[in-house]
Image (cartoon, rainbow, N blue to C red):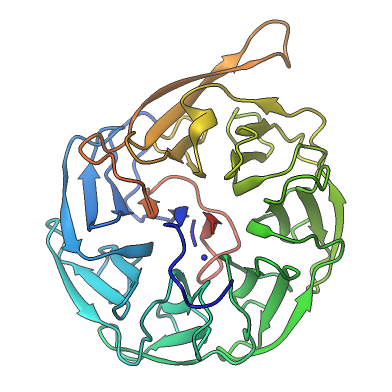
Length: 402
């Protein structure tokens, strides 16, 4: 998941929900207990949850300070998933996990302050996870790439190709050369596919066609089953008509885009097989004006013939992420909700008869101890892994609202 343009005045808090799905050598068979890690960034504190239960029963405080974006990955290669957080008024940090639920956080060398986005990938293809930092502000530095030199030391440099503020970053091998690229949402400018030469140098950023204003979020996945990454993109400007769109990739970094036909003003998007039929589905979360959260089942060929508006508490969500947490072949949906309400985890139960009618979900709090507005939440689970992220064996879907 995982995975956020104006002057450098501080905007209203971002809401970002990022989901990382990573392989595990010790993943158990379906139906057996599993352990997963969740990390959340809120207005005043970062928290983590580690548990075999869904939703988790054990959560603790990671660090104080306003982290606007978090990502999960094994930075130091010890087999334990670490947490990287981008923070306002402070440098980004790596929080190293000792495997016992204890995290030691260290500033990333050279990381600029007020970075509001973080995404992980092995950008120079050396077997270690690196980080890309971005921001929706307009400081001198708008994006950085932080190379992982030793597993415990990351050093950042300016990422010159991204010379515009961003509202979302997603990682995947867009042009099929084995190196992770970036899908970049630019807020008031066209979305871009930024291609990596395999050394962590982004040589070009290609504008996606049919771009609209106020693009908020994008997610990468192979939606039509042809082996190339595609994109689902949201917009959040009222009065434009249906602007959320599906962009099918050709495997060379180019996309063909068409509207999905939903009311616009969605602020977040996530992709996963929610109904367990083998085809990837799309969930769009509501925006600032609030047209509601939509579930669009896919048929596996890149077609999404029907979209359903979801009821409470899902209709309140400002961010969403999907993953199969219990190994039953259906992705659970984690929703970030506004202040005063806990984030929720929702399971797909089925469709009302006849087939293809209204979908039914069962929802429960994800982390009931915190009801502050979520800036970010990330999940790790040993279930499901698909091409598109890090070393080619994992995938991240992320979404954000400015």
